[in-house]
Length: 419
Image (cartoon, rainbow, N blue to C red; front, side):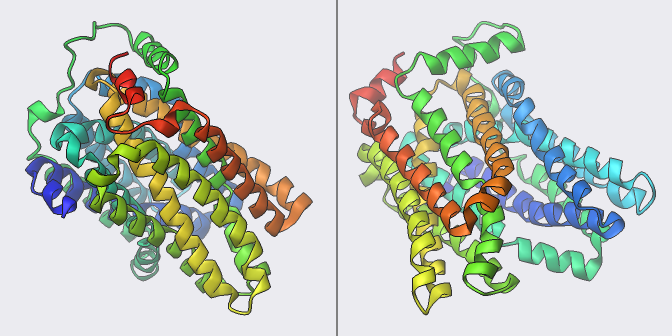
């Protein structure tokens, strides 16, 4: 199977295992960060501040981080960011519940977000240097599946926090980052070194502008960025809408909420398995797959809004539809990642991924900020319908762009490569 072939590559195996370990740490990290503030202050405003502190640096520093990713060895960037996060996390249990706790937690959240603005583009840019182009879809699918599977570990993170206490959990979190750094060591230095052969050394801001100009001049990449931003904007409110949908529409509590959330990521896992397993047969239809995935995501959200409230088995129907939504999301994400990796020259790859990261992370906070007023005005069902219609319209718009026609041997793809 394609996954097995990718994992036979020692460098990619190290990268993937490091991701598995760090994602386990993340499941502890995100739960413990929020819970320790709640435990000590019981202030929801401060809890929200932790989330903002972790997302803000990723948006603000994505472009300069991408420029550095295209200058420095990506292997050492990943190791360095893991070591910094591991050391930063240790500050929280060392401070304990003293007066400085909240500022320290906000500092750690900001440092974690800042390090991810480097680590994300470095990881995405490194994959094409570790596996051949024919295995990029399966490698990206495996990465996406690992990320999605980690979402289900939040339950384990909550158990660890409950059993060991919030402060003790940070020791495990720190250890996971240090272990991840060690696992990355077998990756060759050469694989991590970006190709600078056709890229003259300029300032970081100039390189960031170069990346934006590079994207603007392409027929395809603007559509890629827009698709990332639109889907992020549309799906951002789900985290807020889903608990209300579970309780007010389905009539169930927190257990059902967890099952629904898990079914979404279970669908992403299934979709990643499908895309990764048949990547060679689907590579010629990459644009069609992404467009279809966008349309199916919108359709699934519309059906979630309509069907569960009309049938007696509402929870089961909702689980199936959210799993279907997860499958559709994977049909967007995996081919999109592979397309950028294949189409963008190595010396610009980090910066282009940083633009994608910034677009993807900047959109959800905007839609989340609008969610409260929209919920008050339209209610849960209508807001889900609005989300579904918005995603579906995004799919229709993408279908009218050159992105919908990109494939392995398509002329639009050649245009990308030869710009």
